[in-house]
Length: 439
Image (cartoon, rainbow, N blue to C red; front, side, top):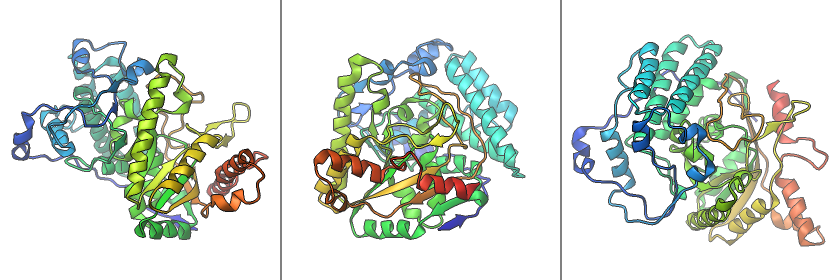
């Protein structure tokens, strides 16, 4: 067990792209990658026509989000396409130097019709909530941190309004010309109270790193608490297991790939993009399309695992943990047995050896989800400065569990219970330990 101690970062870099390095690609037109993609409907033209387009983002229906783009040839590599986006991007927010200028820039872009009014409202709300959280931390450089990090966030959100990014079924973290990974880390870092954060079973994390170096695949079966989970996990492990922090691949639902305030953070992570079961039937006529897209993503993951040395994080619950509506106590959402079974089969049938470990994460206070599951994109983001916790259990072996079972259904039930963070009687194991330690 290991107690982390650290202080929030007070700096944030901005993208630096020389015009000479981009001149060769800036005139080229971009197209989609060779694989089908989950995408956000292009809004560039409509956003410029109206600053209050009701069909965009915060009132965007699942039917608009779920558009599946057909295969095409790409004339630009991912890096070239990223460079093209940076070259053509407005510096409206990057040119601001004060809070007043930053908030004024939001209003100016809205009035000019280049920023939908509902996205603008979300930007202002996010700014105020983030500011309050950082001030709560007591950091003497809080004002500097808020302005630097929120300037970067609003700049990245506005870039995606101008030129929407499209995620492939397998998305590799974008580290250049703009480092989206460090962008996400630096944004969440000052929200984590490291002096009151905890990482358990460091020896198991080291064992995981050793297996990865040997070419094995690792699967972390985890609860899911907030949109900030990937950044929190990476921050808690960066001093002891930096390789895990930067190389983990997350199974990501379509909502974090389409929400304009969330997309830039998703771009900095390695992702397998899927449709969550919780939202699979929100629009019945799109259910079959979503299933096919998930099958495609599953194949992408199978190809990835063949090469070995992959660490994959998955939340078999299909959504974030939420408090009990009566008691207000937080419990991990129940795991889906079929999802675990599919993952186990992937681990068993990939060329490289596979290992499955249960992971417990506690960070809901930093950015708690809405109390109820929402269909609409654009949830209100409450933010606070708080301690966090992370712990991993020893590997779970399917053969050891199945040896004592009488039939396949019993095997699935016992295996799901073994990987889940909740016992049959409803009591939490690792997660309860984290609660006790952090209180």
